[in-house]
Length: 259
Length: 361
Image 1 (cartoon, rainbow over the protein chains, first blue to last red):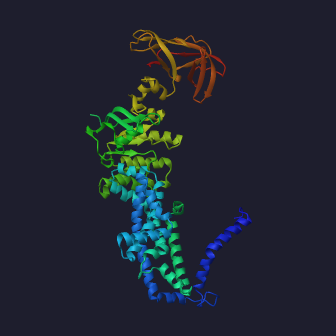
Image 2: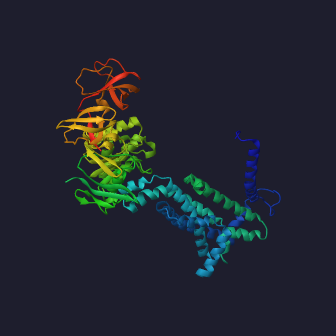
Image 3: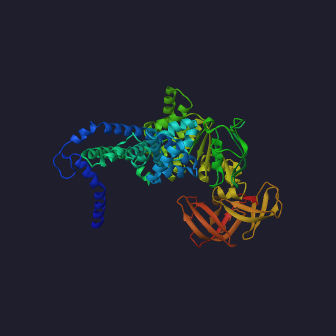
């Protein structure tokens, strides 16, 4: 630490404070025994208890988990295939097609998906449209992580497997899949976190009647930032953080792969 | 019938002809080497034999049967890759068991064969290790064991010693020879190292620009190179531009613009006036401080220009009176050896009339 000058350390500290103090405040006030987010009164867990008895909240949580689970599973499958194809056949346009949703502004993606579902597919908005939307923006992440993993491997081990008597399918099952599995798991967790806290795109394609946790939070804070919102946000933050830490443990090169 | 036969093999990459009309026959149990500088087509040939690449023309026959259209996994031959290509997520035993599992061997047989093969390559204590825990030489032996365990008809080796350090490479050469003799499986070995090729092979095909320049046993290759390229590529050699001045059944008279007359032998009838190059190995040349009385036909005066003392031998570079430079290798422990010559010393350079060979252009 001491090899950095004081001003640089102060600047770094300020940036971290800017990023994490609001989160810390939310977490802190979720345990505050007061209706108002104004002053500290005393410690309580009753806001969490109230969450557990809130029907709307539980339904939204159930939807979020279901959507996250299904969409990240599908995205992992498709993303893995895209990653493999990009690595093996070096197609010209596929990377662009797969990665565009990652870089595109969410609001644009939300609007275009809404138009697509309504005008082109004539789909009733709901769980299915949210699922498709989440798969769309998750594939790219999985594909990039899978490709990065493949790119770091010695190409001749796949030839060696064939040479030693393995059919293409056996080569995939015995060699390729086990080797990219950590990357796929990391990609899955990444897609899961993206799905569970997505607001903008979900907002456009959710329609009426289906709520996810981020949508629920949004509808609650229209009135006021209540302690329940703090509690819910704290739970979501904890879940997301856990998944990201898990993902980076499984594939340490994950963060490099995204860059 | 040969074990493996290449007939008029051709492979093009765009406008580049990587392999041009190569025909070779490899016998059962033979240690056969494809030798040549990088880009000569030797690895392309190996990849076509293994089935990773398909020829544009000609065919590959194994036991007289064409391999055209046969995928790599269906060919009864295995490859040892330069990078070893061990499966990083499997143990040593798992790696070696892989080809047996793929061919559907029973569990007890797999266990027995893996054990035997581990013994063969002296790695019995490393069965449970993962590749990243092994040294380069150990990885090399695992790759060999994995290639041999399912008793292929032929083992293909693509510069397998290239990644090892010099000392280990020499050790592995001896091990390879012993291993090949023990298993009796034909080896097709690809290398750019002429020293490795000479040390290991029963026969060597020297390649250049996609063609086979000469295919012979190591000593034939060394003592009777077919042309200037082979002479120059295999071992150290002096090449002197000459013209034939006289040719009888045995004796050959040559004239070099800078050396003058050279006496040589050649069984071929050669036309007077034919041009070519006289090739002479440095170890067949003697460097003396005085004009020896010994009956050496070829004696030339010169001065030592460079000198490398290598322990067992001294490597001289002598500039002869006509300006021609000659390399000579003199053993340091020769009987009656009186003194070393120093740089700048006037010396006599001599060789027997049957020491060199005449190569037509």
